[in-house]
Length: 308
Image 1 (cartoon, rainbow, N blue to C red):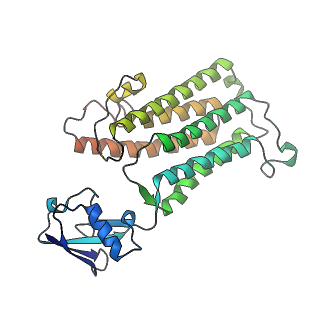
Image 2 (image 1 turned 30 degrees about the horizontal axis):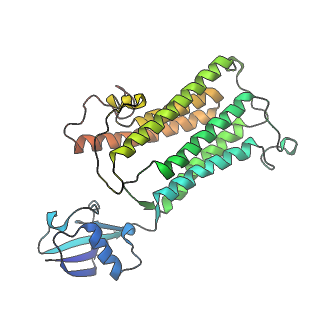
Image 3 (image 1 turned 120 degrees about the vertical axis):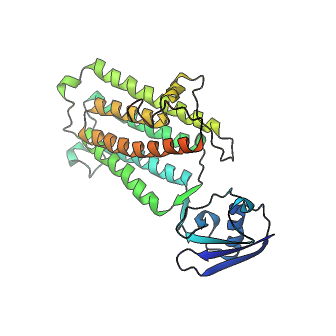
């Protein structure tokens, strides 16, 4: 048996003392014990650490495998109010879907009154609306039926930042694409060019979905097991030979196609910002793979084959 004391990471005050804890108890179980004495700090809100400024221990870490003595001293930090990732994603993706359609149908108080509920004369505008709506409907369905989250929650405050990003860009793009004065540049109105960009957009959307399904199948339900993703029989997954995070590669491709289709500066800016953020995520995940798996394929790049 072990004794566990939990101190406040900031003040070093003792918050809780747990007597006779089983050596094979996990950090997740210790969090549940701590929650009983401090009901306001539910497990998802707790960060338990070996050092006040150290990294949070994983829920699956076992007490007897940690560098602690007979009396284990841990440090607690409040992560703040939490919200489930499913709720976050549903909120993030529903917003752009609805906001874009408000501009597409030109509801009152967006443009001049004479344009209320009018329709654009450019077929590219209607095609763009279908592509944008398809993208976010796909994301909503993936959230509900495909994704498996290794972390169940995130800080509630982050949802405001995330929604501002997705909702704000959706409004900015939609305002210009659906504007009564919007006119696609004449040299890009060739139907063949538009159809090529549409095919490229759809190709990348299917590729993105294929990668998400492949990643989902790597992790059994209720498990946090991590494995190296490899190509499957699905040709869209063969890009795993060269890229660690092809879901971001396909996502970038989709927005490049949408940019070329609409020839709209806000869309290009959204694509650039998204590419920068996805590159940061991809590099982080690539480093994590290299650190965790000694036999990780050396040929892979984080997001762009042989480049980045």
